[in-house]
Length: 293
Image (cartoon, rainbow, N blue to C red; front, side, top):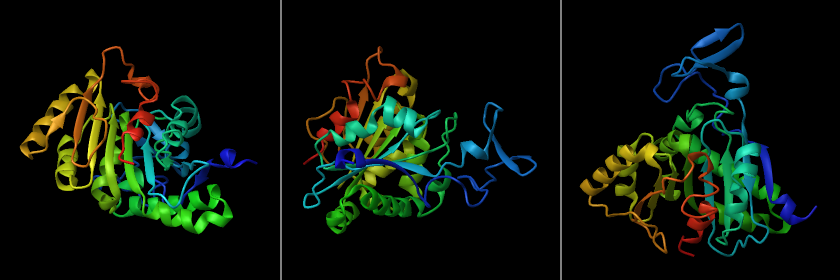
């Protein structure tokens, strides 16, 4: 098997967002509120019940490492948080082509994408809402990525490079809740060098503004949006201005620390297809190419 084939894999991780170890949600209340014998279920805002198996029990993550990853160069770790109604294989890997965009960006970048609520309209953060779990997830994912995707002779150096890698947190649509939890409870703030929202600002404008204002020495924020999140973006812009964080509405050539780019997308942009075509084709690849080398 070639290195290029071996560079993408799906594995189970002990610190994945699901399954829950305890029946507690981000608000401290029971997450599962329905029982059917031994089965546990959760009632959504629309009154629909989703059962723990299979919706909240998938502990797999999609991991990818470029075949030409250079452990001697600074590395970037992209953590992709998918939206509602998604499966890693069907949506993140094949339809949105997230691994291809990350590996093709030329930024010595690796990918980690956890399975969130499985194929369901639920933005819950799962165990990422527990203090320190996101930090432990990163550590475990990097170790597993090294073990599965790096050649044996280079594993020690690859592990060291990934441990020092800057983290770019990318949330699409419903991925905004896990992103907010990772930033506030993940115990990994110092590692996160960028937050990218693809039409994902449905809430937490104050949280994201506070995060950038306190981390602007080394982090940036990009939020591309359609009309569906326009009101939240207006709120975010006001909050950033109150914290003396300048905002632009066009992507710069280089995403420098401290920059905040709130990018309105053309009316023709389809929310469901944003990872394929937003301001350009393969927009995630384009953003990663704008990172300082």
